[in-house]
Length: 331
Ligand SMILES: Cc1cc2nc3c(=O)[nH]c(=O)nc-3n(C[C@H](O)[C@H](O)[C@H](O)COP(=O)(O)O)c2cc1C
Image (tube, rainbow, N blue to C red):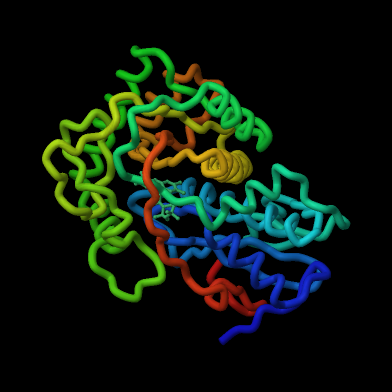
């Protein structure tokens, strides 16, 4: 089994803890498409090209969002260990194929907010259960908007009945297109259902109840249990579109970090979240969504937020499987 080396002035066990925190990030179908190269003066984040989802995510856009989320956790965990992370994103020639390089930018104690977010890392989960009817407190909503801004991204709150109706239509349209795409369905099937001892994918316990096409907001079908009669979804969740300010890998990595900051800020405030990614995954619908936002913003992911009851954690690959050796060409 690969040993985690020392790096950035941290002992091997501390580096192990930092990478473990990074690996708790969310990812599409829990594919965990990230690898880390650990060198004495840097930790590089690489995409794991063997974990791509070519039908669902042909341009690797969501892969980079997921890696951005892992990068945010990595930054937080380093801050928790007293290291100020100095991040270069999409570094190019300095580290071919890397999405980011993190170096030691000095020493600093974490502030209260960083501590609260770090505490939320192992508690954050995608919650596909029905939420309570209570609306999200406007102050909390404002803090989520601020969380995205701090990471150079934008949280567009779907507020007016007209915008809600339009987004629901986009979700439905995209969902139906994906249902007809057998490659998208095959990718979903390969990460769901009964997979004992799997270290990736979505176990039945986390799948949420089985969605129905007439639902207000149509969720992906992760092969969860049939819905009990009378058990329905909340009527008015907070729905937000997380956007970057530009297209391409840098905007996507920023949006991934913003997504994770929003999710952790939500967790720290007792909120639950789940995703409605269909309209950003189907290109034709994504273009319509983009123009409905006024063309300045690039929609990256759609989140539903509210109050709910806890859900179990999903599995993760062990840190030993996330290490990229210098002669390894998985990235
Ligand atoms: C970019 C992105 C898109 C996602 N899209 C969906 C989605 O459309 N529907 C859904 O139920 N979960 C979605 N997820 C959630 C993942 O399935 C989830 O993160 C993964 O299973 C790990 O579980 P956890 O978030 O509870 O740790 C998405 C996650 C990411 C990062």
